Image 1 (tube, rainbow, N blue to C red):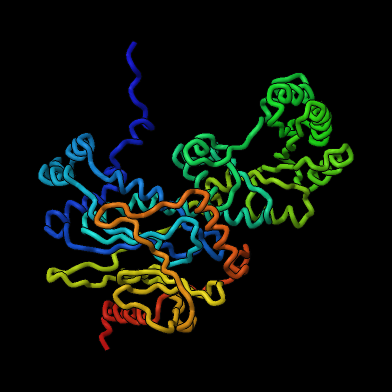
Image 2: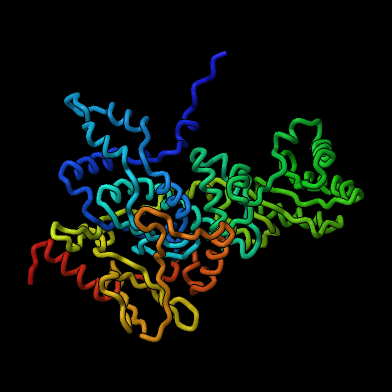
Length: 495
């Protein structure tokens, strides 16, 4: 019997990641090579321009996946054969053979800095900085944005949902609605960094050690002649994992059936671990279900809810007095439902000229928020009495000395003075040096703990879902002045 041909998934996840990019990155790389500027040193920064979900913060995530990508950034023979097959409009080869030979010898030589996963971050702050040969730094753009944008978005959404739950566990149930295999696995990981307590995604559990949770669906109940029989049969099969989904037919009767089987479990030394509500008026049903459970001696049995939840619905249910104590959040978390993209960008900010001197670069726009920041950038977080008070983006060639003034990059009239005695930490840490990974990756649990602890440090106003506090994060005054002068010169004002 003939073996079936390998499917898309088995062909996609391969040792070499050189083709994980957009074509225009490779055409630019070819152009750099043709112009013999491909080895000129350049600096790029990955930033986002606005907090997601109209919120007051973001949670950095995706750096570990970016490290794995960079360690596998090369071109194998199959990649080069494919690139050699591409044709331009005239039918001629898009890339000449000498360039493909050059790519065959590709070896990462860049310095990379990154913000630790779980760090609370703000618009315009670099999450990743790449310095190295122009061709190499350019090739990284698409993949780095893909990895960091999505996971930062989902980690932020998870953090917001967890805040809404006010200390109660949140479980990520979004695999079936996620965008593909990698989308589901990445979302589960990012949601855990953001604060979720577990996932239904068994592959993510295996890969990352995330606790996995789940019992049965409506189809289990529908396979039996009655709901009571279904619950009883499940309890007999798996007495140590009984959370009964009670809304297949009549929700409150379902709760009574769960109680009946709960008594059977209790007689055999097993607790009824919970009931789950997946539809209907969750506030009303949870309150009535709680009354039934308490009256029947199951006051310690928790009520879990799902049904297209997000941070806003959870907050509303709590205001309505819902007696839910565990939250299963799926579609709106794993897909970042209300904002499907972070909008991060990757911009050139400095390049060495032919004399070996650094020259800053700035990308202009009619919209101030889209104007890039020049320089070799770092982010410094200042604290007074242990609490963050401002973040300053500065050029490492012009280090901050003493007091600092932080200028909002969109509204330069908004400024924050930071005294010289304030303590600080720089957020971008070395990840690669000369193409070699030097970063000691924290565990996933440490990343998750970092997110939780960092959010607790900041003023609670940034956690508001409506009109959140705007934390002072912007450009160091000297950098702001240099950027302004570059913009004016570029627009023809030389005074």
